[in-house]
Length: 125
Image 1 (cartoon, rainbow, N blue to C red):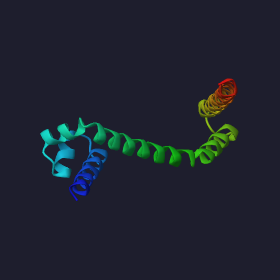
Image 2 (cartoon, rainbow, N blue to C red; image 1 turned 60 degrees about the vertical axis):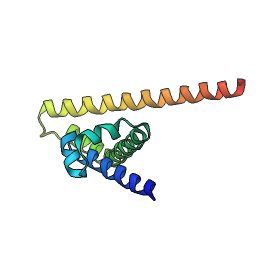
Image 3 (spheres, helix red, strand yellow; image 1 turned 90 degrees about the vertical axis):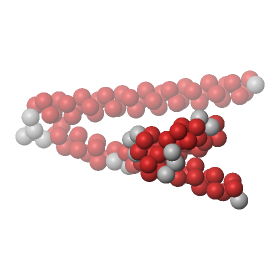
Image 4 (tube, helix red, strand yellow; image 1 turned 180 degrees about the vertical axis):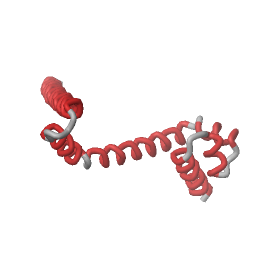
């Protein structure tokens, strides 16, 4: 039962760390003294749990951003095509589209090359 209490305490600390800007604020929010909080944060198991929570938060934010890419592309396309938009806005939108297209191509190319190398390595190994 002590394990569940410890897990609950760690979950509360992770939540506090994720929702505040400083260790002091996290300490206050979680009800755990700052000194104890630093000690807990140095624990390998807690560090793993905290890293996992941060990764999940970043992953969720990334998915949310990705869901808006079509709107962003449509907005850039509208600005590029809008003859009443300022020339600098049209150039910036065009430049952004070209840069993002190049980055996407490079990422796809790297993924393809990496997959091929992994496949070759697997076949040899």
